[in-house]
Length: 254
Ligand SMILES: [Zn+2]
Image (tube, rainbow, N blue to C red; front, side, top):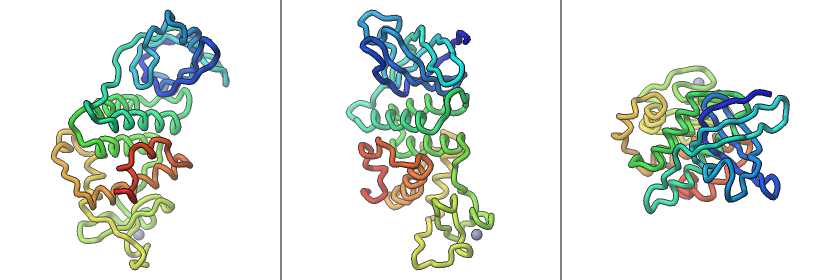
């Protein structure tokens, strides 16, 4: 049992008793933390109004060993998530980010890159970047951080690198791109445009300043979702709850 301090993002809240809550946070130094916040439902508590979804808080908690929930002793509000004016989907994007963080990470497994990216993504959801691209960047980074990113620079079967004159298909089951030699039944395949792959690789490896220049056509958007939506469902083992609210992430609805 030890007393710890860190900065964290609130990703889930649930009632625990008449006066307490269980709070799930994704923290900078400890990864995911699940803690009881005693008295959090009282009007005057040690947490004031800090414990809302998507708030960034400075916390003090007692880390328990084994499967026991930690005890949150203090949470001070640092920053609230700002919903883009008039765009409810920006809030849903924030909830989706929290859903993936909660579902795809383990307790006490710190990933500083993932924490930093989560905070940057929330800023992008409130900003001027097209929401579908900001969400896609978040999905790519979390998949990469947990080691579940599909192969996007070559054939997942034979390793043949992507070339501008050859259109690869994408297979969730085979773990990424599949070249025409490994996937010869071209009648059924729907190869990806090289430009669509370029968008993915740019979002993953390019400089943020260059993303502002990315222009994504409706066809490319459909192709991007045809890759990412089934990949997320596959890795999660189910359809994310927030897909029902973010209709533009459904490749069959756009
Ligand atoms: Zn191949």
